[in-house]
Amino acid sequence: MLLNTFVFIILRFLRHVHSSISVVLLATVTILLGLGMSLAMNQFDIPREDIHIAAFIGLAVLTSIGMISFILALQYEEAGLVALIRCADVIFSFLWQMLIGVFPDRYR
Image 1 (spheres, rainbow, N blue to C red):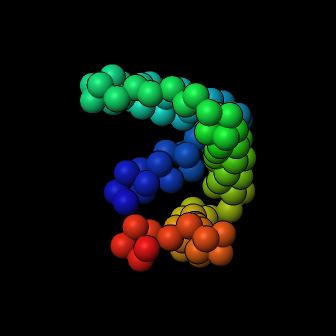
Image 2 (cartoon, rainbow, N blue to C red):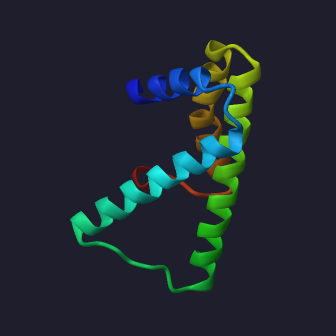
């Protein structure tokens, strides 16, 4: 949660930078960190099934749209309100997965 606070503050500070530059920078850092962690744990598995590839592409598109929306919201609105709405994403994600029939392992 502390790291998210730093992201809010830094993105709010960089509000005059175009949102696509912020998204590209965040995506690049995330790819490098993920690749490094995968190689360090020796668990670098490329998806081979079409459904998994489609899910990863969909995830990438939706994450990019979410980040662009989040950055634009931080540029045009107060950071406290945006942070509160952003934290509600966890609740909405949990409810959405229940609606489509994906339950945590504990409740199966």
